[in-house]
Length: 100
Image (cartoon, rainbow, N blue to C red):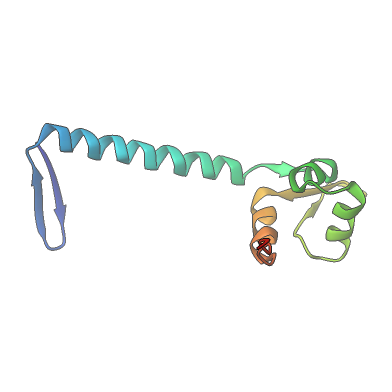
């Protein structure tokens, strides 16, 4: 049996199969959240950014110089771009037009 206490009362589940499914689902949700958090801590060099976005290094430098993507500087022209900044950049891109 598994019990959840909420603001509205208590939930109890006696079905072992349901309890197992709930626990497996919770484990999957936690694993996905952990993987996302680890991915967001990744940082790319300009070369890595270019590979990540499938663009040239010159285009990656342009994105940085024009302020279109966030970055930090680790020394002279040693740029680092976080995965979070890459995702923010991608979120601002217009959706691709689909061919009819």
